[in-house]
Amino acid sequence: MLIPLKRGADPLSRQVYLWIRHGIMERMLRPGESLPSTRELAEENSISRTVVVQAYDQLIAEGFITGRRGSGTYVSEQLNSAASPLPKRTAPLRLSEFGKAATAIVRHGLSPIQQRGPLRYDFAYGTSSLEEFPLAAWRRILLRRTRRAPLRSFDYGAAMGDTALREAITGHLQRSRAIHCDVSQVLIVNGSQQALDLTIRLLLNPGDLVAVEDPQYHGMRQVLMAGRLRVRPVPVDQNGIDLSRMPHQAKLALVTPSHQFPTGAVLSLERRLALLAWARRANAVIVEDDYDGEFRYEGEPVEPLQSLDRDGRVLYVGTFSRTMFPALRIGYVVAPRPLVPAFTAAKWLADRHTAILEQETLAEFIATGAYERHLRRTRRINATRRAALLSAIEQHLADRVTVSGSGSGTHIVLWPRAKVSEAAIIARAAAVGVGIYGIAGYYLRQPAHPGFVLGYANLTVAQIREGIRRLSEVL
Image 1 (cartoon, rainbow, N blue to C red):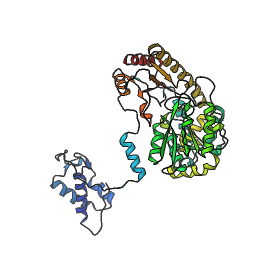
Image 2 (image 1 turned 90 degrees about the vertical axis):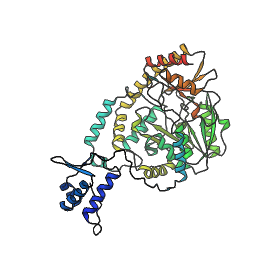
Image 3 (image 1 turned 120 degrees about the vertical axis):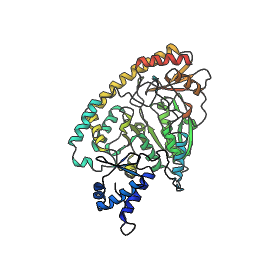
Image 4 (image 1 turned 45 degrees about the vertical axis):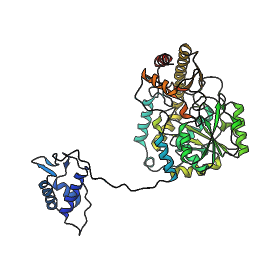
């Protein structure tokens, strides 16, 4: 208990008395709480024990503290524990425009997903099953790295990220996604959300026009709103973003071409080439968010925009939150070479660097082949879950819904053919233990049809089948 004593002011015993009394009155010291002994308090504050004894005697006399023989000194339990501390004045602090926008976002909810209690058949999306993740192997690598880490691993790291991890990511992207890049273009960030934030702050000014898919990922929309940008929603159909509706003056386009979020549409090759041509005409930048491009179940994978780009206009964003586990918070940006210095500086200004030991562990996890083995196993398991989901829908809901987004990713969208209320269906489904999620909250404009997003990566085959059977009774 360090007490801010002032020499030459009130007597020291009076200052100690007032400090402890204030702590008790403000409920910083609770009834029944133990206080330091007079000897300990004197030593900690470099004062005479006599000073502390005098202060304690006064507090005992007034009933604020009590002494127990052989036990110590305590805050009196006779004080009214229900009494509230004295009211404090709150300074009228002013928020910036960003602060006001961020506060408005929090007021309206950070996510369109309504928080509720656990449901047995919860078709939540954006999560992966930790039961399939090789946690034992991850822990072994992390523990070994921690034990053998040189001192430099506990110092500040490079803003761009660990070199070994950037090399591992570069190799993996070239093998699995046909991404054309080298190590110098890869920057490690704290998840795809930070990648979006840095991109917007580097390339856009308040009032700039941005084209986004409609519907779109809510975290993307909120970053744009906080940046006070003009957001132009562009409709999405079964082939992805409708390029005939693209604004001519937009400076940036945010897209999820491999598995549009949330509809699941895959942007056709024809439209990918047309989108690159639009960016060339508009002198715009394209942000390609490949949030779950690792999971594809039908046909040949379509080339990422980044691999088709010949002008250096595409920023490729990836994350390990979906393929590994969300708490890892490691993502990456593949930036055109001219933008690398700016991204490095922005990352340094934001948080210096991403956690080093986790980067080193992930680098080894990828380099040893454990990551790709995990991906292959996860694809097989998710393919089985997907097949069970589509089979159950065909059995129980075939004539009442249409399905989109089943060719890749880890979620689908159910579109009821009848006119229904999303809120009512969600509530009725929850009443029978089934969690489904409305799509309306992801639109900037009013959606033409209600729909429900169903994730399947965190459910067993039996849970999927029973969940769909129960949902069919609700619908």
